[in-house]
Image (tube, rainbow, N blue to C red):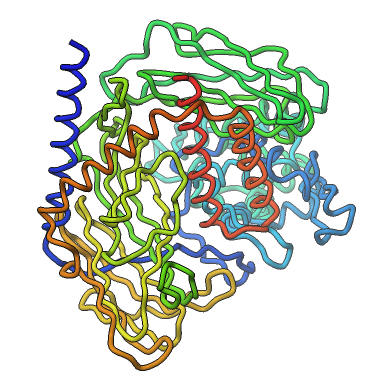
Length: 625
């Protein structure tokens, strides 16, 4: 019975892979490839101007801003926001302004804070946070630091003045809908519209209250003291924010070694129509390679909540939360000990699974091309392609196909990724998530693809001297931007779709950019020609689909190799505990490097996603064992 099921499973996966490969290898030619988005640290003058599209969709949450600030900003700006962080005190970064200095903050626009957080400030050695915080999170922390000049007492005094003088026009919640405006049909300012208020300084508000605004608003300078007017300004600002008081909570500070902390959160089912299981174990794992690994388990409550109390905060340790659902690990980001608060929140999202490849598209392809000398058999001169392919899962389920292991247990495969014929894959080679079939320039990704976008990074070598046709098949529809960055000065891209688009500096090297928007059905090949002398004038090397051995005869071989690789993967012994801990440590170290501006932000994002996915795979293998 088991043998029959096993044979049927093998037949099914052979059919699925055959369908994928047949469609891919026999697809028509179309044209292209590309590499990384470049985010550089700006100066205040060079940063893009604030527009209404930059405004938050929701009111900034000061509690969340306080958490982000404590975890990411205190080394420079100080835990209290006074500008006396350890890096300022030891001279590593320039002196910082104090966010507690009311006179200084009153001259600053919140929109300018948001812009600096987004694009960085190279003059102050501040890195950009565009790729590390969402737009809403950047607003949360921008408004948090802008609010530090106000006290709870000042807000309370301002609230009383507002109720007495302002609510009749501006409304109780500051939306400009007070009863007087309704009766007269006139309009008053909406203090909850951040796109407007963020471009004003506190002093702008002060002058309006002090001197009035023509016939629309009376002057209050003779009625209230200067301190009272500043209190009213502080309260008006608070109307466009949420969680002002919770942001002052004493628990929002970094934990010291030895202090007990709380780690809690919510488990949410993100697939529409699906429900959380009735019971689920939530696991907390913490420790280090040197100190050993500790773990705790807590039950998920009926509402999806969980909580770990009295967790020890230990230096140089890392903390993660994970659950297993439908035989798959769902793992939180790594929380290093230097980011532990007294009260920590970690939420996890769960997804059901879908096996329909129609939910997958390629939304972006970025490729950098550089000259290199490699010892690859007899090939010593050619080009190295660093490629990032961005896949989009348009469903609210994670995409995966079941594949059989030798024991009959079902494993996971998902994406089929193909390289230009004639290329030599350089990485990933030993990553357990990939099943590589070099002979057919193909590999299968063996992890589920969650909803949203997933980046797959790979590096391959193509022999080159004077000309090459780069012809890369894609199983999935392409709908998005394709960029090719070329470093060698004498090599040009010839394509009807990829057009010259200026230059980009990537990690200190100037690349010429060729880009275009591509829409192609699944099974098409993206092709372009590289022309120009690399070494000496000899007969051109042409690498194209036509150079592949007859496709039909090779499909059986590639399927056998892929299944063999998958079975080999399933038979390996359990991953060592030390390897899992090393991955956790690498993620934490990568975060630290990025926070200190030591790594390109696009490279950081790709490497972090790669390490986290490998961690999930190794933990899954360990659990199976």
